Length: 473
Image (cartoon, rainbow, N blue to C red):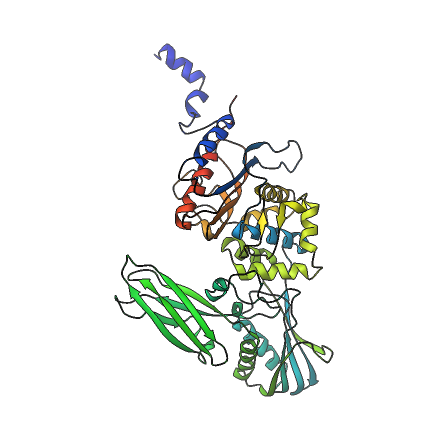
């Protein structure tokens, strides 16, 4: 026979099946907890901006509830959180299935052609293997001889290298010149691997067959585990010499290094000519056309980029600066103010942001956390909403959040864009607490003298605090 208390518990199973987690907090306590956190000495070493709200209901049955704000209307550097703006605007302009085209035009007939021209359309993913597909197609069409092989260097509206970017970011391979026709990200990729203590690092081209004309000067060394790590590069494009300097710790992982080509067009033209030569097409001369002096001629081949969905996945999950800047330029081809016009339709006030680039590398950018919240809220109302959210790194699962929030309540339930510059860290996106409504959040810190590796756990602590929310009577 059951005891009296057992009979009561059987009759009220919810009392035992849905216990209140001991870590759960009510919305009324979130502000108190976060205020206490951001005023501790560890957090006082920087300027913080935080905004947390419930997620828009696409059916309009409820308005978002502001759960916490801290200096959320102030202007902040947000580093790569700026990619949220770039990718959202590009999706709004073109849609998730849009593809960019790289085309080949020419004039001639049969085996002999007077000229053949490669024309870029802003595809940041174009690779040498794509040129080989084009070359094979031209051979299959019967082309055996080209008098003049051309590429066009028609520029985007903005210069290839943004004048507000740090020269160190360019030298370190964080970004390369942004061009309408780009190949292999307009860079020469290397892999740098530590060796025995005091030995030079091992340097290897990622694509040896594409870089065989380049000479490497190795001025690196393998250092003790207590020493600082850094890699610097210097490029002499005229002499095709790459100088690699710096050091990595013994036993550390190989380090990929992109060496940006400050003038990528000769490299692209050489790769285009080599691809055609490999299939047996003879070429008399080559040239780079800034503004083609003759009509486009007959279209011989058109290569479509991956759908915009895939390009945006790369941009946000991997925080790809080259992709972000290219997408920004492609969107601006509609008109220079296209992105700001899109933001205006979403209710972002013009005094809540300033955009100097599309990647967040520029320290002249600024955005308020509330403006990022507004941007993220509006994406929930768009038909491409799943594409946008899924492009963001997922906590403990993929992208730049793959190794963060492991074995916590946030693993797999936060989709957010990361951002890091010297003295800057940011995390903005969507969160799904187990016992509360979905959230939109933006957490930013500026002017910190703490290294990024120490800053990120402090942002994560704030995010984990909001994940404890539960509905309270």
